Amino acid sequence: MLVPTVIEKSNWGERAYDIYSRLLKDRIVFLGGPIDEAMANTIVAQMLFLESQDPEKDVVLYINSPGGMVYPGLAIYDTMQYIKPDVATVCFGMAASMAAVLLTAGAPGKRFILPNAQVLLHQVMGGAEGQATDVAITARQIVKTKDKLNKILSKHTHQPLNRVEKDTDRDFYMSADEAKVYGTVDKIIRSKDRLIGSSTKRQSNIKKKSLQARASAVH
Image (cartoon, rainbow, N blue to C red; front, side, top):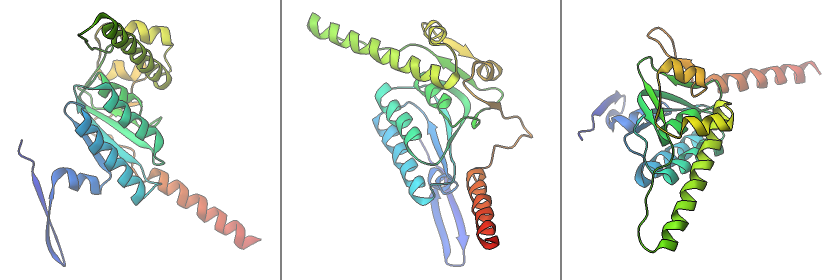
């Protein structure tokens, strides 16, 4: 796939970025395509880098993905919860399977979806071959993983666990409006809406520090 290059001019000359590196400068991380180890490691590294650059400013994760491998996806999920900056999530196109879990796991109030995007939830899929004992071990692990993902979805959507278990038993498609009602996202971004600025958290901290400084000056 051809990756576009962005040329930026400054007083020191020109600098070329691939489009994803340029987006990273604006604290935008792009999840496009199947989730595998390489994709997950890249996204985790970007989030850790952005936290080191500014731990108070939001990261925005754009998602258009059919899902993919569970454990690499959980590595992204854990990093989203681990880093100090809020991670806002934005779905365009589709967030399916593990990608839908990541969309749902965005910071409360900062989970967005475009009007024609879709969300797909379903249960974990996997397979095994070999000796009967090994197949049974793998099957038990798949069930444990399914239960773990259902609990994560229940936590972030505030849906009862038994409803999540029922809904994810088969393919469960949601439009943008349905995803909002279900609790997968908080807001549908329409043409004239503006995404909550990634500087919200920083501005709040600046105001807090300013008030503290004034209080100190009074005393």
